[in-house]
Amino acid sequence: MPTPDHWFEPVADHLGAAYLRYSFTKGTEQEVGFLVDALGLAPGMRVLDVGCGPGRHAHALARRGIEVVGVDISQRFVDLAAASAPPGATFVRADARALAVDGGFDAAISLCQGAFGLAGGPAAPLDGDAAVLAGIARALRPGGVAAVSAFSAYFQVRWLEDRDTFDADAGVNHERTEVRDESGAVAAADLWTTCFTPRELRLLAAAAGLAVVAIWSVTPGAYGREAPTVGSPEYLLVARRP
Image (cartoon, rainbow, N blue to C red):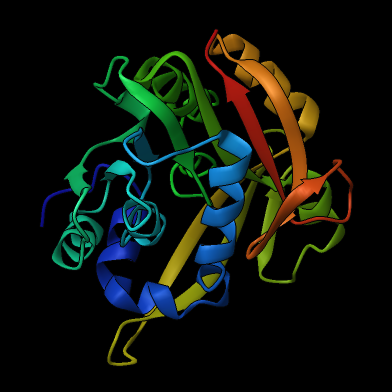
């Protein structure tokens, strides 16, 4: 078998549609409804979904009349997303760390660690997530807006589980776990997730040439405009390309 381009590919290949069984995927409509309002999205606009997975956010946006292009490192996820796509949603395999998209999108999203936050891993460069955010910034037209979710470093350290190892130097959490496919077959998996503080998100956004609009504390399925806290599992960065 060829060497995967990213550690997540074999995990996604095994999960397939079973990814959508996880509880954190059940809040899609609430998340998209919030983002449509917060980002000022309207029918006819173009949105890039970076790390789209099986396409749940892209599908929900397309059903609202928004044109969406979803990209993911996993061909399995791309195929699943395309197979059930509503009109207006298209999907391509691409590495979010090297997006070859320049301008033209009214908005870009990367949610639930779809790409941003997954650039860590064995021998990964420290600035992998910065490359993802820079690609998102390039994809936006001037005035375009991005929404990117990220795990909270505060929350991760506070609730560190026995099966997890947190690298305080890199800010990366390593989890040894098992994943099941649609039939229930089990495979061992190693997951590496980079965690952030709001300050780090602001610095990364600035380095990518984005102006921060807001950073909110969020929980999957319960997006809102809550100021950053140490008790929420994720932050949502909203930033605009000048």
